[in-house]
Length: 163
Image (cartoon, rainbow, N blue to C red; front, top):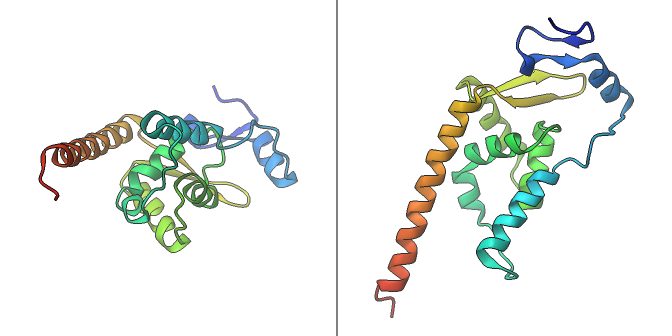
C-alpha cells in the first residue's frame, strides 16, 4: 500500500512524495550533487579510450544519437531529469549546445513511443524510464551499431590505403 505522503496513479515511477513537492516549492535540494554519475561515467569512458588526451564530441554525431543519449542520461540520474538539466548535461559533458527546439520534441516522442514517462512537477516536467527493459535493449542495440561501425573504421585505418 502506498504511503499517504505519496501522490501518484499506481506505479512507483508515477508516484511523487509530498516531501519532494514541498522541497521543490521551497527550493530545497539536499540530494547529492546532481549529475555526478553522468560526469563520472563520461569521464571514465573518455579516460579509458583516450587517456590524458583531450577528446571533443562532434555535434552531428550527438544529434544522430540523441534519443539514446537522452534515455542514457535519464538512466544515470537519480533526480533532475527535466529538459533543462538534460540540455545542461549535453552542453557540459558532450560539448554540444542544442536548442530546446531540438531536445524537447525528442523527449516528447520518446514519451509517445513508451520509452519515457513524463511526470508533472510543480515548476517543471521530469522524465523517467517508462519501460527500463525495452529502453535498455534499444540503447544496447545502438551501442552495438556504433561499436561495429567504429571497429570497421579502425580496421580501414589500419588496413586501408589512405595515402
